[in-house]
Image (tube, rainbow, N blue to C red; front, side, top):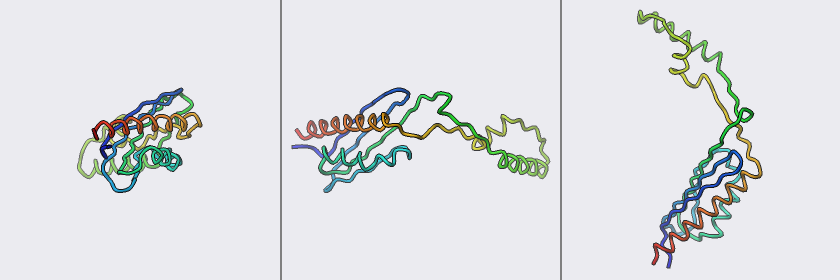
Length: 154
């Protein structure tokens, strides 16, 4: 007899990508799988659901996938919001004048007060090796969860 409650976790790493998968399964009449993962993994949801359904028949299964990319120069893009910054600075100075406050703002202050003015983006492209890594790591986590459910049911 198996318990309906179980947890499983697994880590995988290849090249500059680290994946962590955590599975939480609780009682449920039917199989319901809920994913909590980066948006870039959305295309993987259907094949991942299929892999889970091959090993778990029922219950509510929450799947948490974390992706950590060890970035190199080519995978990072930094952009700035110049027009927004100009409008922000104009509004700041107008408010300082209205409140009769000193206007001694530095660029560091601007970035600290409005961090959205600088946007740092990592490449969101998923290569074949990463998709395989996610699938393998998920399978290990599901197996750990199934093992935990069997242990709980004893």
